[in-house]
Amino acid sequence: MSDEEFINQFETCTFPAASFHHREHAKVVWLYLQRYSVLETLARFSENLKRFAAANGKANLYHETITWSYVFLINERMERNGKGSGWDNFAKNNADLFSWKSNILKSYYSEQTLSSELARKTFVFPEKFAP
Image (cartoon, rainbow, N blue to C red; front, side, top):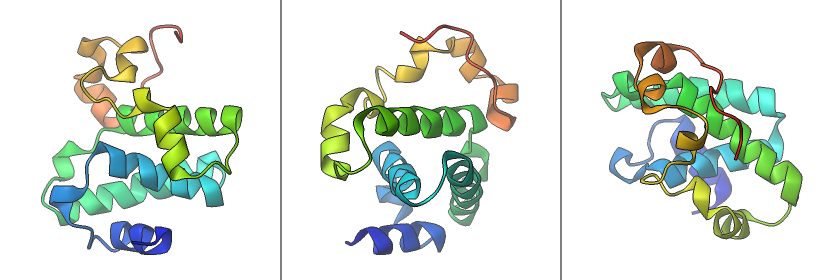
């Protein structure tokens, strides 16, 4: 599937929900950051992810702090390493962004904060320093 088809299926909520996992979320963010500023990406991705979740009966799964944190982390990695390396190289060189079990956000947030209703509804600043 082309990048345009990937984005289109996400934005039109036709991407198979059962196949839209963390890696696919990150790929959409990466594709948006190729085209838009980080703030435009944040707005577009958050809005479209909420719509995608609602269309698939999972509106309650949207988590603002996790979403925003990953947008900023992916943007930082792209800025440090260049935007032109391609998705496969980006994913290979940033494997820590894709390991949900050893979630990178644990370096920035306590489990208590990430599991809070406040963090789900609104962006909460990290409580720990970057590793």
